[in-house]
Image (tube, rainbow, N blue to C red; front, side, top):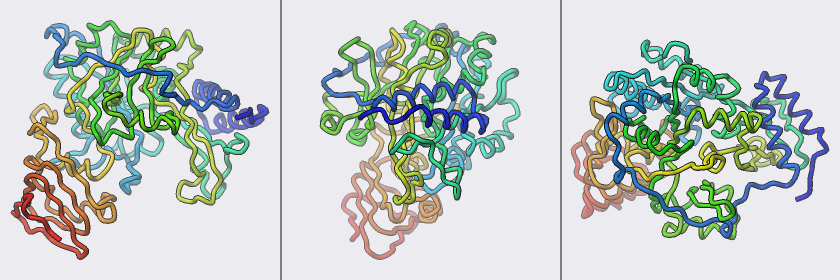
Amino acid sequence: MASKGNGRGLDLARQKMRDAGVDEVAIDTFAHYYRLLEHGETGMIAEDTIEPLDMEALADVVVPDDVAAEAIGKTAVIKLNGGLGTSMGMDRAKSLLCVRRGLSFLDIIARQVLHLRQQYGVTLPLMFMNSFRTSADTMAALERYDDLAVDGLPLEFLQNKEPKLLAADLMPAAYPKAPDLEWCPPGHGDIYTALRGTGLLARLQDAGYRYVFVSNSDNLGAVPDARVAGWFAQSGAPFAIEAVRRTPSDRKGGHFARRKSDGRIVLRETAQTPDQDKEALADLDRHRYCSTNNLWFDIEAMTSTLDARGGILGLPLIKNVKHLDPADPSTPEVIQVETAMGAAIEVFEGATTIEVGRDRFVPVKTTDDLLVLRSDVYDLGKDFVLDQAGDEVPYVSLDGDFYKLVGDFDKRFPEGAPSLREAGSFTVEGDWTFGRGVKVVGEVSLESRAAQRVEGGTVLDEQEQHA
């Protein structure tokens, strides 16, 4: 693809960002990616440039208790909390969803951290990277935890925003009838830009913290565990990501690999995989590990690397092509310039990965995931850590016509989730409503063209097929 811009598009985009009060560090970072786009960069990672990655498992690592305790005492925690849960029909922070016993994701995260502070006698600051859409709701929900904030550090900082660019000429898109749609988030790789631009990275270093643990707020398995902190401290690595074995449900997602040219670990996302390599992407025997998006970095290493690169970490570009109004395919195609925070692994010499149990990766992307989380598949202990009850997490597939949106989903489970502890899989086709105390055993599939109700106390087992 030939260079499209003549510099005018970038000038207009810069001015638009300044007028909106966007931080200069973020503007410079956006300019870096704009120039890559102008020169035809696609961010693609071809299969013949990488090889599979193997790694050690946390279960096989010895971490002395004193090392773990010392490491957690030098750690700060950041939760990515910019998501609205729009795919589930929400218009506020997804982390406000009720998970268990009247507690939201935010409640459980706060209580996990408060428990660890007490257990280890550490400060363990907790901060949320919010978007301008999630900030107010999130901060209101956290007001009940008056001992959560740590002196000298904020409970939140905001991710940046950037203009969508017209695919035709890389000019900033205009949409007067809905100006909000002219903007997009820069992907969660923006965390490094935001930490630098807000001065938070320097404040953490000045306050004596050494490590940062970052994870998604919709993953309650991502506890800032002292043993993992101790492993990271022992490793001496500047940067690390927790990985899990890929399962069939991860076939379409990204994976780790090693770049042949320099031996660096890379994280290849689906959007960075050429069409001819999609089969290799889905090969679970070849590429065995995917990212949990639980990552650790050394504050000194991050600061010195950003200093050396003029404040721009230089993460690989992800070129996301969408319609200006995603709900209206007649609007022009735009490019959203994005980066993934895990891609920073290739920036640091000596960065590493570790295989962790699936209990540290419990993301909620759909109402299928939400049903599992609300069921008895996990126990929630006094430490507010999810404890998986059985060996396997059941496969759940709910009919998208009736369960995709949280409001519709809640109406069909008015008295709580069924017991899934003894389930292998649970597939629901059609409109089914469930009473209190329903139990699913083995492989269960429900199918009906007419609306149905499963009465309270019913045991659904694999012999009990409904048609």
